Amino acid sequence: MQDADATVTVEAARLGKLVTDIFAASGCAADEAGRIGHYLLSANLAGHDSHGVIRTPRYVQWLQDGKVLAGQTLSVVSEGPVFATVDGNYGFGQTIGPQAVDLGIAKARAAGVAVIALRHSGHLGRIGDWGERAAEAGLASIHFVNVEGGELVAPFGGVDRRFSTNPVCIGIPGTGDAPMLLLDMATSLVAEGKVLVASNGGKKIPPGSLVRPDGQFTDDPAALYGPLKPSAPRDPAMGEGALVAFGLHKGSGLAFMCEMLAGVLSGGGTSGPVPGGRRSRISNGMLSVYLDPAKFAGADFHARARAYADYVKASRPVTAGGEVLVPGEPEARTRAERLARGVPLQKQTWDAIRATAAGLGVAVPD
Ligand code: NAD
Image 1: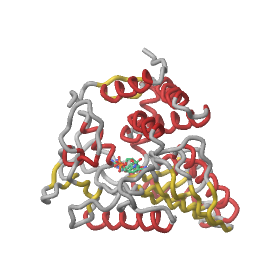
Image 2: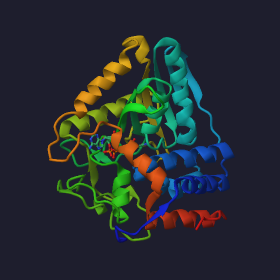
Image 3: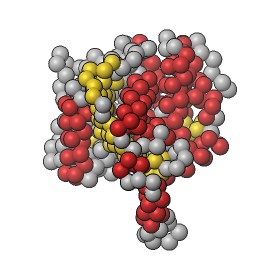
Image 4: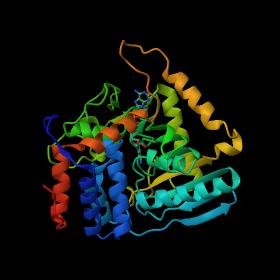
């Protein structure tokens, strides 16, 4: 494992450009490469390093292996005025995600509400990006997500993997582009990417985030990835343990429902075993609900929502000098700081990105 303090700081625009250049050199069209660079950087800016540029080598490998496809457009499977089921055709989530969200925005603007069930999208990354896109259009939104064939999480009371990390996101629009509130969370106690970061010497995961096959709880990433070798890629298939759902039976139940809504109702697939063994493609499903607040609450929605959010924030802190934050606030602060000061990366992450760039003949900035 690397020294946890071994970090480099890269200016945000340069980092985004490097990732964009890598995907352009990998065979993506310029606009798609730009979107992948934009959204991976966006996750780092929000402080979710687990879903940021650390994914670059893995995404490039998936593209080379045909597990994700460049240049895809979603197809409509079924459609009505307030709903659609759409298929992402295993295109990059950074391309398919915005297409699916924009369809929901268009329908909700016309009808007040829309439900979009997306199947077979490539990895959708940080789901908060989709809640933010809807909020920018003035809409509240709810997103339930699953990973087809991606079981990593044990159900409450069990040790065998059954669920994926099943993120849920709820966005409440503000009066400007940024959401007033953005709850965006995995239903596992920690997202898999946070175990990945910890396994590379980054921030430790909380005790009891993982369960071993014998029922013992642990924070050792080896339970998920098997014995850790410093330079070897982390593969959850090599570990015998499982992630644990947050909030005991309640988080486990929410993960279960994500599989039902994003996996079964979308017509995609659940986290469970895939016919023929290991999955050949990477696939997120996402069931999204879009709501136009003006059509429900009327013109004073923002004022009432703001007043309540301020009231919640005004709760007296547990510790002297402490503070109550609202969902989305930590990410907004981290974004402002990293845009100003640069994006800190684990040295191992930066080296892996540089090696991927070098392998594709992409120049790396100093
Ligand atoms: P997290 O635990 O860091 O944050 C969860 C939520 O809690 C956020 O909305 C955040 O604003 C809020 N929050 C954090 N600290 C707070 C505080 N002190 N007070 C009040 N609110 C606070 O997030 P996570 O569960 O580790 O998820 C990380 C990311 O992983 C998310 O962006 C998620 O979408 C992504 N993810 C994606 C997939 C996928 O398949 N695409 C799977 C799992 C997770």
